[in-house]
Length: 326
Image 1 (tube, rainbow, N blue to C red):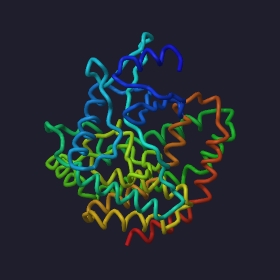
Image 2 (cartoon, one colour; image 1 turned 90 degrees about the vertical axis):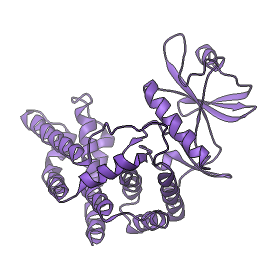
Image 3 (cartoon, rainbow, N blue to C red; image 1 turned 45 degrees about the vertical axis):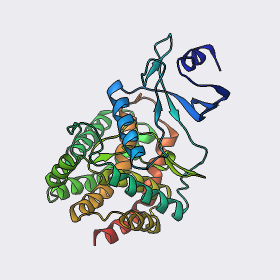
Image 4 (cartoon, one colour; image 1 turned 30 degrees about the vertical axis):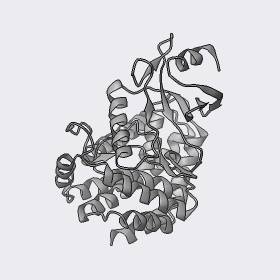
């Protein structure tokens, strides 16, 4: 461990047995169990909110969460002499959710449903929704897609990524426009009213990386993006990634949906919202956003590959959506 990290660790009441690097962080084997020391880029209020949520879950028996440890000053965030901020969290020995295994996907979906049921009204104070609604997010995404197309069209010299982007734009943007039209028929105000009244919270980053299968059961980690939000968005984020990684194999969506609804059945409006979210060409927008917000004179072969995969998966994806529509 280098001196700067030792300086941080010494601000905690922990007795070290061993330390090693782990995915850009430090894994600490301590007398009180496994912990992870990771750089933290969020605000103090976000850290406190995540901690309150995790403590609320633990109090209801949902104990396998990466709760923060407070330092000797009883603070969640610890700085070194260079001003870099860190958090120390309880950690677990286990394997990430296997997104190629339907049972693991189903178990992770059920874990999400159980957690969602507990993440209602667990905060000590009522909070207000501060993000963008689902329709607002889609509208922003579509404006950005149009802006990027206009930017690329004006260029005299276009690279391989830009040429491929223009060739695919029309069909994916048509899907984006259709999604925006469908949102006009969704009673999303009802969803957000229920969310505010029940104080329903979302994990904010529920994906296979943050679901660990351990000998003690499933552990749920990385609540840094937790917020007041309609909970269908957590499920959408989880299944979209699973479907993309499995070439939109319908069996994985069925496994996740059936397992989640064995605990908590979605309402009619929630199912509509899920369909609309899956119908939106999210991956196309993400690749576009990455390109536009990075150095545009440079392009990544990886992003070209992602666009090519989108093109290859489009028929399978649309077939799944057609079935889901009914």
